[in-house]
Length: 133
Image (cartoon, rainbow, N blue to C red; front, side, top):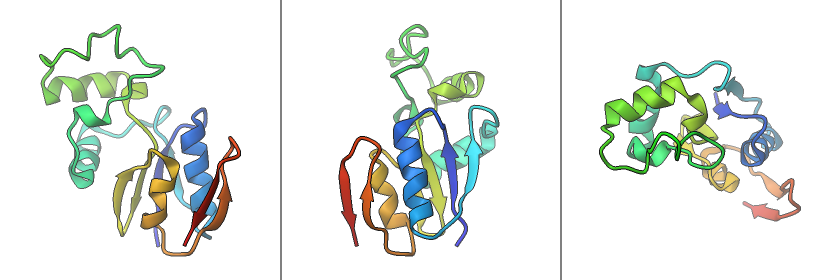
């Protein structure tokens, strides 16, 4: 099974999600999207496949969200996409793509249903224990 994770190594949720994928026995394709952002078409495809709105993919914390006034509903989807491409940190993460689906994995255990192999017991970086399958 091919698994791709749009990953930010500075994000604990993203690191936990990546570790869960690896613990399931799969070595994913890791796209560090801050270094290699998705194209506009790829971003639109990810959003469509997840079945969410463009706005639902925006990250607020630790981004220029407030400075850019992105809480204002005046922004069109195309404008929001332009801003995410100009400032990839605005793209929420981690996004995981597998043959079972595409999902924004927040919280990290949202990845479990996308994996083929049982995960078992997983301990997150903060000590929280996840008992899966």
